[in-house]
Image 1 (cartoon, rainbow, N blue to C red):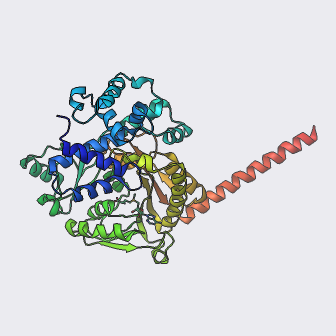
Image 2: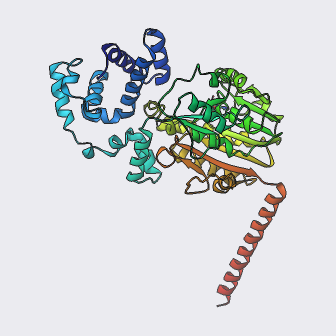
Image 3: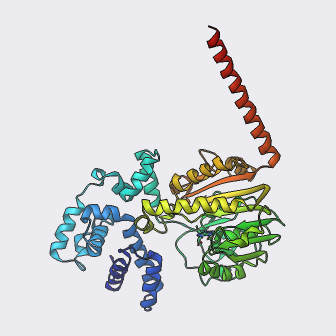
Length: 453
Ligand SMILES: C[S@@+](CC[C@H](N)C(=O)[O-])C[C@H]1O[C@@H](n2cnc3c(N)ncnc32)[C@H](O)[C@@H]1O
């Protein structure tokens, strides 16, 4: 069956609220479900799936039905051209003239559409990726991967149980549970079970976290008893993973500028059993409170505020809510946060810069610019770090870049930097100066020879 009329009307209602893109889609959905208390879990699942499907496919639906067709016709395009529903099924919800349109839409060939439509990207994203040198094939692969629904990943909380024990327990409870391919703590669940009241969740045996997110925390290489800062901790997804790797020892600072997000960390911390986390609201990346920790951290994770374009599987509306202008604003913030967070890292300590963006402008460009002005930091090859952990993750370069198609995760980026000793920096400067002198000599020699002849 297509949808019940209650479900259909709720989908339309949701789309009309979301499509102006003035608020995040998930916030609009939660509000809608609060207002329609009578909807059961199954209804909610079907409604959310349809709404998010339409949002993911919107460039295609606009190409089929028209840029300004509106929620009802885009939904018709979704049902007729993407879900391939029959006109008979659609006749419950659409007028005769609309069904005539749907008949034409069914015949449209996607192969004839522009790249952005095929990839499911608005034009600004296609242009941004092309400007970074990505080929059409790469853009298409990326777009198609990010246009799929995301799996549901858990991170076993090693403070309370082992992954294998949790896997076994979940299977006894008839969950379809498999270990994730790369993260040593990850479990991928089949279907989309609701977990918020599950005893394992309430008891802190696991957290819901994409496998890619789990791996970012592993790159910080934290150990028992260390001093660590999660500089952009938000509601603490990565803080909790870091704290568990530290076995709840040492000190883990969770900074953020958002009081609301840090407040959301509290119940998660309570469930997790961690006692080494100190959350700290900061006014900005240059807050005075940070100064006293300068040079004290073994590891600092900067999970920078970003466009979130790597999470389009979960937040498809972001591709319409971000723009080239918002990315440029984020770039300035990202550079400033990285420079400030770097001051906390002690000699030999690690600085991990991470985003959930697919744009190099938010990723390697920020890191390369930072390194160009901070010779006291050097890049570490992520492949070496992962090999030490026996994680066989295919990567093309020294930084971590994960994508749905290549790794089955959201799109993530991370670069690992290490603070070198001042002696090493001084040696390098001396060597560079010596090179320069040698260069000058040879220039002088050339000039002398030229003068002689
Ligand atoms: C990608 S989110 C962090 C997600 C979080 N690490 C997690 O795993 O759940 C980026 C965070 O940076 C925070 N942020 C924005 N500007 C900041 C700043 N100047 N200093 C520190 N945090 C900042 C945002 O409030 C947001 O929570």
